[in-house]
Length: 379
Image (tube, rainbow, N blue to C red; front, side, top):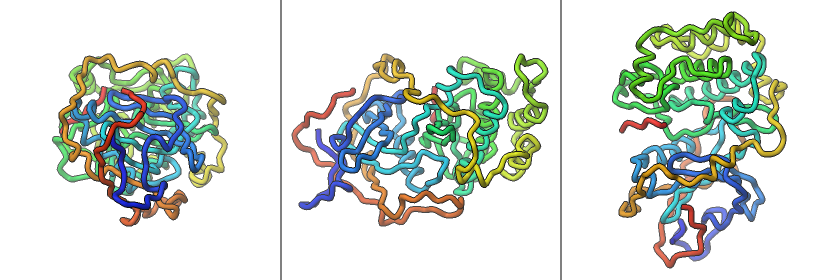
C-alpha cells in the first residue's frame, strides 16, 4: 500500500507525510466513512486530531466531493474558534487530515452528561457566533452546524469543526441541498437559494436543544423534517420548562428559528445577533482573546464515547475497490511555520499559495500499515 510522497531524493520529513509518522492513541470520533484519532506526531511531539478517511467508503457513499471540500475549505480558513488544519496527505487506501486536538469532547457528548444552565449556554453560543462571524466574512456558509460539530477545549471554549459541507456563497444555489436533517434551514430543505441565515437557523436549533433536550422540528427522516417545518412556526415558551430561562433567551431562540429567512435574526448581518438583549452582557473582545471565564469546564480525562467510535461499520455499505486514484489528486497540504500563529483580528488570513505542495502517489509494495478498515444530506 503506497504512501503519499514527493518525487525527490532528499525528502524533508515535514513535507513527506505518512501515517507511520504518528503515534495513534485512541479514536475520538467517527462518521459513516471516517474515524478521528488522537495522535502524536513522532518528530514534533505535537498532539493532533487525525481524521482517517477510507477512500473506498467515500466513493461508495458518493461523498468524494465532501471529503475533498473539507481540505479546500480548511486551507483558506484559520481562526481561534475553529479546529484548524495542519496537514493533509494520503495513501492508496486513505485520506488523512490533522487538525487541532480539543480535549473537551463535542457538545453532543456533553449534552448527554450535563444539564446546561443559561449562562453556560450563553457562553457556548457566544463562541459559535464569533467563529461563524469569521467564516461568513470569508463568504463561506458552514451548512452542517450541529452539536457533534462543536468541540470544547479543556477550558470550556467552543470551536467549529467539520467543514465537509461548507460552501462559498453563490447567488444561485437552490439545487445544493446539504446538511443534517433537523438542523437544516427550511430554505435549504425546500431547495431554495440560501445564504448565511441558514447557519443562524442551525444555531437556534442547537440552543433550543440545549434548553429543552430536543430539537424544535422533530422527525425520523428528511420527509418528516420537511413536513414538520412547513406545518407551523414553532415557538419556545420558557414558562413551560422545569428549569429557569429568561424571556430574553426565549426571544433569541424564537427569532433564530424563524422559518422565513427574511424574518430570521441575522438576516441583516451578525451585528443584530450580537446586539440582541440576551447577549448584552457578553464581552466579545474578551471572549475572542480568550480572556473570559467559560461558565462550563469539561471534566478532566476522557470526554469521548469510545464504545461508539470503536464500533465497526455494520451499515451494509459495500466499499468500492475499483475507483480511480486520480479523483483524489492534489489532496496534500503542509502548514508552513509562518502560518502557525492564529489570526485574531477576523480580517484577511488567506494562506499563501507557496504553502501548497502537490504530491505524487507512488504505487509500491504494500507496507505493514494498520488495517482499518450533488446533494449531500447526512444522517
